[in-house]
Image (tube, rainbow, N blue to C red):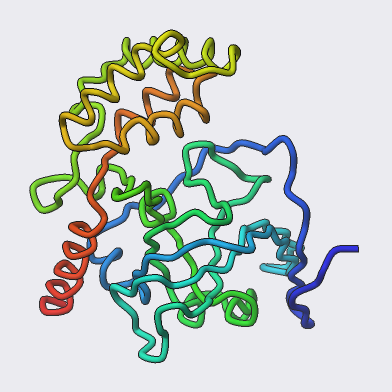
Length: 273
């Protein structure tokens, strides 16, 4: 018997176990503008994830029975950069939802796991469309619609982001360009890593290329680069081409510099809107 977290005459929301293996899908995300990011989101905050669970939404829409699967999770709010809710405070616990699940999955999307720290851009669910059907405010506080861009994982002193947060107005750098990682080097890294984990040892003998890149990263002032690369190698070493596609569009940015940049962007768009 699965836990029902909300139920009325229109919708039933039930906690379900994740599907293993995950069912991969190609997502088509709407085009995101800076105005969407900075004005249309009610909360921008650095948070730590906990209590992750998958739910099934069962409802009728346009005379059809519908089942949608999404992931919900609680977060502890560490730092508020922007909030439309004046009562929200740091250390508060809020709930967040994202439009994907183990039944509709993309390996390249952020890992939503307990203990992971993110910067999230979320919309107040009370302001979303279709609440006459979905009743979202009854079971989740905020919704991250473009999680491929607006849920930024924090690694040490850096956020990981894509090219949405690149360009002259952002302090981010492309990791592959900064470290001289090419497609050929990525394929070599993947092969090296697969051999190293088979030996259960990642050192100068089993992973000399990774350690060489780590030394370059330290000289370039990005000491977390090895941990970031290992994170993606662990996810994609079996598919070097996918690994290259992900790394090639990966940007890193110092978290405190970026947070100040976000505050300035929010203030700018408030003034011009």
